[in-house]
Amino acid sequence: MLGAYPAGRVEGSSIAGCTWIDLVDPTDAEKATFEQTFGLRVPTKDEVAEIETSSRLQIEKDALYMTAPLILTPDADAGPWISAPAGFVLSKQVLLTVRSAKSVAVDKVIAELGPKSEFHPTFAFVRIAEALVDRLADLLEASSHDLDEASHSIFRQQDAKRLSRETAALRQLMIRTGRISERMARIHYTLVCLDRMAKFTIERCNDWIAHDMVVRLQAVSADIASLVQFSEGLVSRVQLLQDAATGIISIDQNDVMKVLTVASVVGIPPVLVVGIYGMNFKNMPELDWAWGYPYALLVVVVTAALPLIWFKWKDWI
Image 1 (spheres, rainbow, N blue to C red):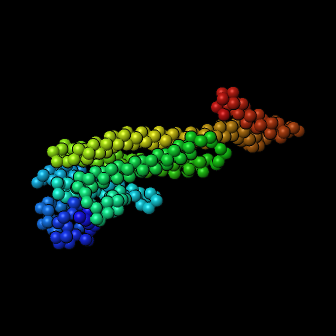
Image 2 (cartoon, rainbow, N blue to C red; image 1 turned 90 degrees about the horizontal axis):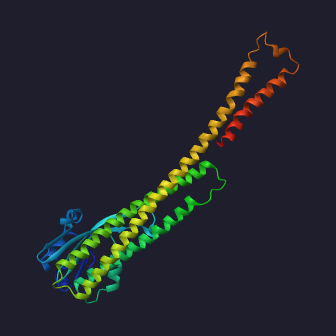
Image 3 (spheres, rainbow, N blue to C red; image 1 turned 180 degrees about the vertical axis):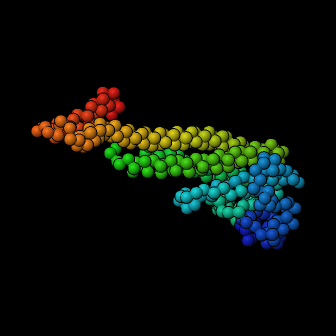
């Protein structure tokens, strides 16, 4: 029988023999059709968006009601990522998926199974879980590559760029790593939800789910555990890179302040000398000296050189 019905194609009794119903932003009529055909309730948007574990994993009429957020990425994985909640209703007769937006992973499973395939509802559920985990693994891999590029940019050998350009580049890298950190949080939360769904299905459906499906769900849970550890490592790398970028910016700014401090200290003695000899009092003996002007210039140079020599001796510059 037909394995999946996208939104807008749920009509009358034609879905009675289906084992997977996929509703994308369903209408009230489509919900009513499903409920009348299978005797199961379609989760509402508010129920799908619940964050409590007790609300995400429930049993009604021997059917499992589960929810998990789906990671939606724009084309070419550019721009912000969005989490869209999705609902899963798994029973012995049918699998219902309710989502508010398209999902690359779910659409891939729909294309894989095809409209004429015959399969058990748990098989479709397991394939969706596997596809979602594969998709999240791809996103983690892409984020890891982004962090590698950011790390290379931050820890590369500094060249002779202008400080303003260097600081601006580091600021952009901090924004980039911050966005990656936000993505890691979304992926981590989705992985945790999928792991709970897999374990919940194994525990509650062990009496009627096929053994091979149990094994595959256990493999999904194991893959999720490894991905969670990998994502936690990426989060640690994000924190390291942000701290390093902040430290480099602080060091560059300290160098600027050091230069300004040295320039101000070096300029004080010459200004004092010039101020004294610029008063032009009548009884100043240097006014009548033939070498008074060269003498004043020499004093200015010496008083400017002495602080520089002092700073150099102290290894401050």
